[in-house]
Length: 185
Ligand SMILES: [Zn+2]
Image (cartoon, rainbow, N blue to C red; front, side, top):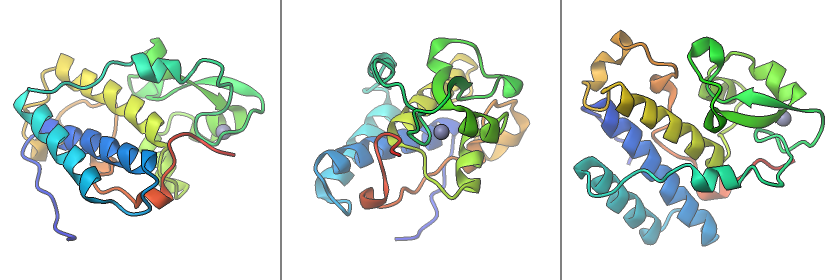
């Protein structure tokens, strides 16, 4: 159960996390408080499909829809003093493109500052809202695809100039009862 997962390539780890997001999403949609067979099946199917190339990461279309009429901080759900935040900080190589930009309240924005998203969340003992993690993973995977990093040996990740902390990305997810799809106040 608590077996450590050995990822051979960067791509395997990133796909595994992405497949876990899909698993958790299905579990939340079905109000499962613990993962069930259906959820695990969704993860297994997607992971295999992504690794073998028969399935693809979704586009950012659905993620962009989340921004419409949704004027709350994507991290904490507050509607106070909203600012724009870079999911991957500019200082770490994040871009000004719309997919990397989200609404954040001033408090979260200044607390996160140029800290890596996952590092910041862990420091605050929080798991990212699923839809934010999904958006983040799409950016991360796209970056690795463009730079031909997906097939790189996972143990060598420190030699790559990654704009995110791949070592901190969660490969084991909390129970759905402890997860949320979006930030809530
Ligand atoms: Zn906030």
